[in-house]
Length: 144
Image (cartoon, rainbow, N blue to C red):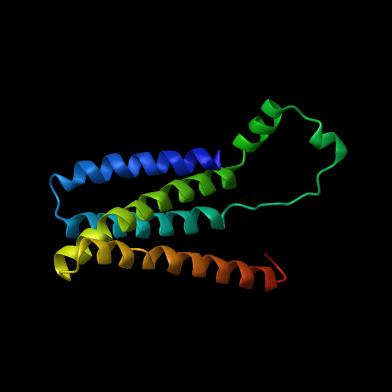
């Protein structure tokens, strides 16, 4: 399901950003991506405050359930759907950075397309470092 939210979020981003690019400049597309990120951040933070996630050690009976039974149980968890929403939404924002930041760099900073593509990796690498840092810090917390 998470892989699907990643792929569906990616596809929705391409459709929305492609349609938006016919009426918006690259600045408008980047602003749209920023608005989506801000909206998702607020939405997920508000919705997840009301969700209580409990982790249980898997019992032998639980692991013997069929795949459809496991999927039904998973589909009833609001936290799972919020996570899918966040995952799909961040794919939208990732598309803005991946496809539009190099155009912005080439247009505004007058760098070559090759240099713009190389500089366009900075958001991805920064995100990778942030994920590792946050993961490390959350592992150090007693209450995760």
